[in-house]
Length: 158
Length: 377
Image 1 (tube, helix red, strand yellow):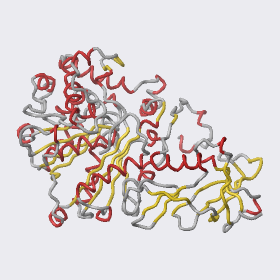
Image 2 (cartoon, helix red, strand yellow):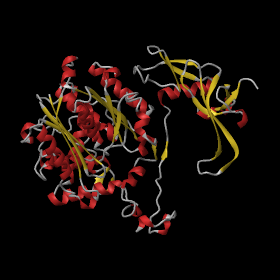
Image 3 (tube, chains in turn orange, green):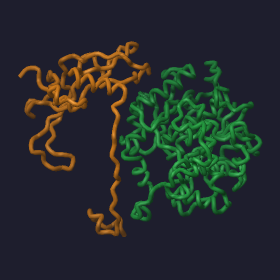
Image 4 (tube, chains in turn blue, orange):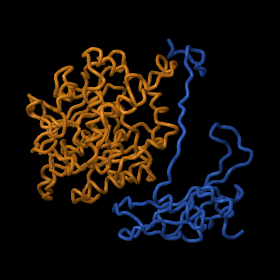
């Protein structure tokens, strides 16, 4: 009875090993194009604006999920954001210990719906919700138009 | 319905938004009028996003609504409408929005690498099969049993790619294609050649389903009525199925016909949109839909019966062969074309006589699933 056998090694049974080989190319889309080009070329973080709902979406979307209008107006998010939540990672997703703990935060901006998940550039002991932060961008020549063009968020005052 | 193309810049969500907005605008409704949303979309592995239903929901208009994702392989092209219909028919919703999407270009180098994993992992996959093989065997079996000539099958590809010329979303319309072009195209897995197959595509489509009361109250003029639905799945083992006659389509069709009070389908149905990812499948499905006797569909095609101006127009939209095959989003040709033909809005594709009743059908999972909808003007 297989059900009553306790084993963690499936290879003990007759088996076939397979892998799902699939690689992907994801397009950033219409709103994503606007967002990442502005980030790369001008170092700006843009939100898209729904005038009828008075909502600003970050990351920008090409449509309002509520009133379903197509959004074509973009604006800069405020220079300073606020950390809404933090976590400090000690293990990677396989359970292996990280050489240094990683600090992650969810950063929100006043008047903006949504926010960004990113690294917090502070020691674990200083990671806390409520911290005022600003984006630290990679130098212009190193930016390629991806979310990694932002190194992370650093405190406004040290 | 969006453009169907091999690659589009838009994300899946953005394609859904475009299709949904078009459907709502054409019905004169807004998202606020929608009670429930059904999203139809194929395996997550095509778009490369796990939990694709959840990922697409804002583009589908599902934000803070009762929302469901359904999937029955290629059968989703018609099945999602059935899932939308039962929300309205049960009285639970007045307005159900159905949005289907596929972004197959994300998957590299080709979606075939994902299709390869729908085979049985122990019995078939160690042989490294290609999905085209199984269709090639089904096509070969059909040809063998009825003595069908390859050129009569190729006529379906020619008809549909020509029909697609009038379709504004079409990816592979060709006004000049000939039977010889199909017969001379590269052999992929004999007897399947390049032009026997529909292409993978990016695209989205959407339909609005509403109750009779709602349609009357809002005085919506452009409407067609769903009068029958049916769906059925065959054995899980492809080796246990009849490769010549799609019994699962016949059962789904009988279920839909019974509901629609159709007892003589060839007389009572004016046109059909069967699923045509391969040219031989249109023939198979016409027989499954009981619109042709067993083995008779190639003859009807050769005699011009299934042409747009024939006695039983089949795939006047241009079908998957002509418009493209973004799996679930083929709802745009299957359900969409019934609506456009029955409301006289098919433009260049309009069947040149009055039509009152149409049937659409989609086919899916591992060639075992049939979904059927009958619609009336």
